[in-house]
Amino acid sequence: MTEQELFSFVRELGYEDLTQATDQYSVWDCYSKSSNIYVELKCRRTHYDKLLIEESKFDRLVKAAADKGMIPVYICSTPNGVWAFNLAGAELVWLDQEMPTTTDFENTNKKIKSVSYLDIHEGLQLA
Image (cartoon, rainbow, N blue to C red):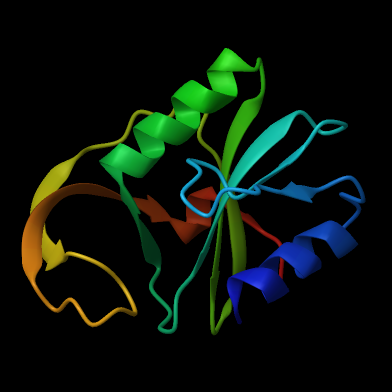
């Protein structure tokens, strides 16, 4: 599933006013005013029961949502389904791990990133 397909899927779930960010470097991917949510979308090619989220992305999304009085939501697809997580008030354990600097680009360098994992059993399965 691509991010555009995931966006369309979420929109079809009843979020008709779901709007994509116009800046590709935005700290959020889309939002719904009627549902009061800021959303980060992520598509994984492999299924994991614990889905990775970077602390820097988490922090920026939570702050941006709070600044607008909205709820930060992380939605992640894998080959086995789609899960949503309400990040408001989430208390995650952060770990420093060596990760690729970027995903799906030519830069194969690695760097230490602070990450956490969201258990799919604690999320809302959408598909």
